[in-house]
Length: 349
Image (cartoon, rainbow, N blue to C red; front, side):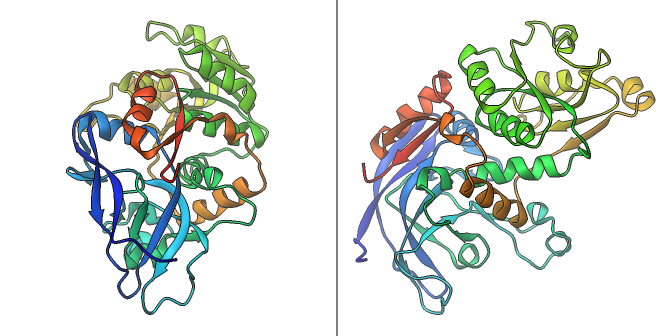
């Protein structure tokens, strides 16, 4: 596969400012490869970075933009024995060091030297050696690139669910029906749990039912949990409440919706610097467990690929539209208007 001298890439320049630029395509050096992007999907993190003009961990502007993708290896550098041009792969958006105590404990998501890779909204993605060695995975046969591009968000979901204490079928509340909330409820319902999703948008509630939710409700306008608790099997509340809204109000509401001995998973990330108010007496006397969840680990990535390969989730429901690279800004704005959950960007379209 012959590489061109340059390629198109969507570059984030500042808040709500994207420009399609023509960049020089570097030839892969030792241990590196170049990926031809077949599909790149939008996500909530992209939307946050778009509106805020960056991300405190993942990227600083100006920079090529996008991090969920599947593609075909276009070229490999010297010293690579595991990969060949023409192979279909997923390249994850982070790579751990593999040496620190967190990596050695299997908690690579907490690696203190975690590196991030952006630039998937483009014709090609240059892949550094560390990502080739630690974050590149073969796409199973007959899996579409659209489904494969969902590996990263699904791996994040699987990691979050894994750290919860779900030893038997449970009653679970998911706050927020974006793509992540839908993936969470899909995985949990497929595992035998009863899941209730709360979201203000009728479109999202309809998708939730198709994803396997026992019910989908409109959350109350106030912060009172009483209307939500009516949907729990036990009047005392849910066994587990998961926030997928990424808002302080969602985090606080989740803590109010679990029964004594229950558990709360803070999945959606809130803006940096925000603070949470908790009923300390309830946390203490009712032994409420609160957990944070961040990112994914290699074990969760492998599990996500296997789940997608056996078509264990109705993920086509999440891919609302398909657009060419030139319409990436419109794709993000359609998410901002809450018209879409995820958009599949096809650079070659």
